[in-house]
Structures are given as C-alpha cells and as structure tokens.
Image (cartoon, rainbow, N blue to C red; front, side):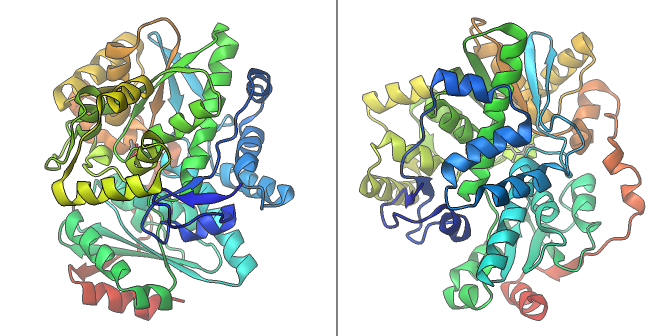
Length: 462
Ligand SMILES: *Cc1c(COP(=O)(O)O)cnc(C)c1O
C-alpha cells in the first residue's frame, strides 16, 4: 500500500514513511492510495477473530512493508497493556450496545491507537537508527495517552505541555506520575491555547524542528486512524453473533473527526454500517455541517465533555478529500478558503452525499447530564459524559431497524465531576487509579513563553 497527501503534493510513499512523516510535507494529511475492499465472506471470517488477530489482519492490508512477524509482535505488545481480555468488549444496556474502548492504561479510547503508535515509532526509529523528540500540548486525554504510549521506549523523548492547574486532577496525575526518564511534563503558566501556540511556534521553526527531530502525536497520524478502524470490525462481529443482524449503526462522540473517520473507512472497506451517527457537544461545527451544510467556525465553548471542545477538526480534511473527488488541488483551495474566511460551503450534490455518509446531532450539557442520569437509573450502567453525548444522539437518530453500537470513549472515573453532577455519586474507580495521588510525581512548572520551552527541550533532548 502506498500513501498520498490530501493536497496532492506527496504520493507513492510507504506505510513506514507515512507513519514517520505524520503531517504530510505539503501541509496535508496522508491517506492510502486505495482503500482495500472486503467481501461479505471476508468480513464474516474476520468477525470471529480475537482482537489482536483481527488487528493484525486489518493493519496488514495497509502496512505491506512491515514484515508479518514484526507486525504481530507490535500488536501483541500494544494490547497486552489492556486490562480486559477482550481489549474492547461490547456490552448490551437498555437497547443499545456499548463498545467499551477505555480498558487501556489511561482509561480513554486514545490508548487503542497510541499504545500501537508508541511501539511502532520505537520499531521504526531503531530500524533507521534515528531518534525522535515528541512535543505536544494537551488539555487532558491526548497527552496522558501519548505519554503512556511512549514511556520507557528507546530513542524517543516526549515533552507534553499542559496548562498548569487547568486539567482535571485525574488527568494531571495520569501524566505527572509517569516518572520514566524519557517523559517530561511541562505545566505551563497559562491556558491550553497558550500551550498550543508555543508548540505551534516551535514546530514552525523548521531548522529547530529538524535539528531536534521533533515529532507529533496528534490525531493527524494515519496509524492512529488505522488502529481505530479495527474496533468497528470487532464490534460488528460481537453484535452480529448476538443478534444475527445484517447491518449495524454506530454512534460516535466526536471532536477532531478522528474516531468517526475511522468508521467511515471501515464502511468503505465493506463493513455493513447503516448509519454513522456523528455526535458533538455544543461545539457543533460538524453537526451543523451535516445538518445544514454550515461549516463555519465558532468560539470554543467549555463543556462537560472537554475532550470534544474543539472547533477545527483536523481530520475533516481527510473526508473532504473524498467529498471533493480525491482532487488534491480542490482540497488545497478549500483549506485556503477555510483559513481565509473561517467557513466552507457545499453544493446541493455534496450536501446530499454528506447526509448519506453521516447523521448528526449536537447535544448540550443539560441533555448530556439528563442522558447520563436516565441511563444509570434504567440500567445501573454509568456512562462518561462523552459517551453520554453519543448515546443521546443514538436515541434520537437511530431508526431502530438494526442494532446501534455507541462508542464509549472514556471511563466515567476520568470525569468524576460531571458524573457526580448527573447522578449524585462518584463513579467507581478502576484499580489502575487506586493510590494514584500517593505516587511520586515529576513535572516542571514553566512560564508560558516559547523561549523557556525551547530551552527546556534543548537541555533535555537526547
Ligand atoms: C479525544 C476524545 C474524543 C474525540 O475523539 P475524536 O477522534 O476527536 O473524534 C471523544 N471522547 C474522549 C473521551 C476523547 O478523549
């Protein structure tokens, strides 16, 4: 499989090169040149497999330049860190299926991709005799999952900036209690936007970026999307075994369009998905786009589902590439228009196509709390607020003709405040969080200044 950029300036590169490139050199995102198509018989055969074997089968279709035995080992190592024997189990509650994606080390679905990406980076860097310094800013989930993915790995350092005192206590502890020597937590005296602006500026200095081999782990890396395609197939297999259904629908709480785009790829590979429901919180640019063709930037609102408090969905460009007929020049133009005007418009024909691809709903905080509360009363099952957004959208939009699978993107214990607001009690703590407050911590408080961060990287980069 060869990879190309959504903007047409990069093509014919291997999977390995695509993983190490991250963002395409022309500023676009990388995609496979073709999407493999599976027959119903192929899908039937896949649906019986255990998770690691299924992951191997799906990922091999896209990573022909990785020797099979090596890929197998990477996958096995990546999912050994999950605490559930099924990796991503499916449970049935109150008429919906919940795909639990939170059994990894940081209790959010990002572990599914980042455990794999960490091992893959280590493997590729060793093979090429290279080093990498990962630099990123986080408001919570991505940072902790990225740290968990690369802690203790050879030839990789990771520098993660978070806004000092402004991430949830659990999320902060999940980062700062990792004391491996290759992990550097920087608590920036400022906001998340300050932290992100610092990271952007440092990446913008190409000479510095090259000298220190800076790498990124945000959701633009194709390997992350690919690892997430796997659980759509897995969930289909489990639910089909229970219901004998021909098709399923998925409801996906979305911010950056990463997780739902993985579902879109699964469908293009032939997985029989009836509805792909895109659920947002009040940051509803994606829902507006699907419902009204209005893709226009708003202000970022703070909600009870903070990991979806995003306006610019970086993976949307991947979908745009298909919507615009795989025309790199058209994507380049559209992205330039979007940067200049803060909005994109679509033809009637494109709008029809978007609505055939997705159903969408924006769910506000009051509805999120009400859904979490009602679900707990009816079933005893406690949702996290992100998952509640998806469950609400499924309840409102699924036609009931086929089973609907809601992606549970985080364990409720990660968002204890919202859960307490909804049901008046604390969610149960999984064993991985027990005693986390008492563990040794390592974190450097640093001014919100590019120079200070750059200097820290220079001092500590390998
Ligand atoms: C990151 C995150 C999301 C949004 O994921 P996307 O890939 O941006 O759609 C949803 N829920 C949780 C808990 C997250 O951490």
